[in-house]
Image (cartoon, rainbow, N blue to C red; front, side, top):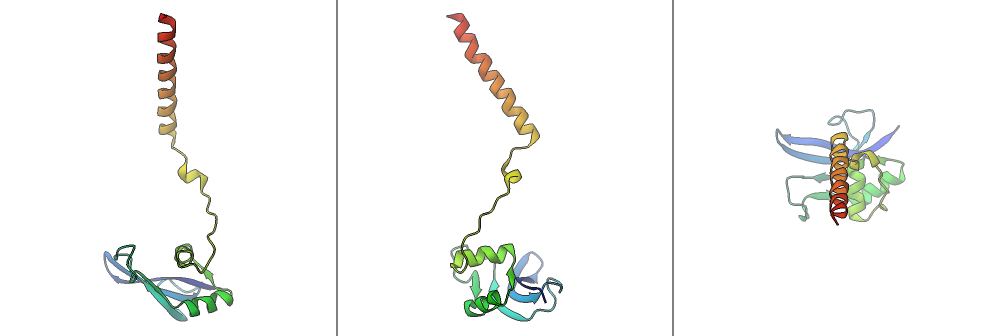
Length: 122
């Protein structure tokens, strides 16, 4: 059975509240889970201790049993110091788009022309 430690959404519309659960990966997001491991309330300030609450002993147990945390849970575990920080690489995300590249090229061409013009006047 492929286990995941993931978020199960609760709360009303536009007021999210999440349970951190250990669940079979084949079950729906808000469906059946095996054990509730904690809560996450994204509406609270980031420095609030109530924002993320986890039963670390049980999280460690499920990790030792082979459960894979989702990306968001992995970041929470890194912040708590349970997991070592993973290297993330998404080079396309930070690259400028086509129009931004074109604008940068035009700006560089204008700057080169402006640099040549005063040199010719001297």
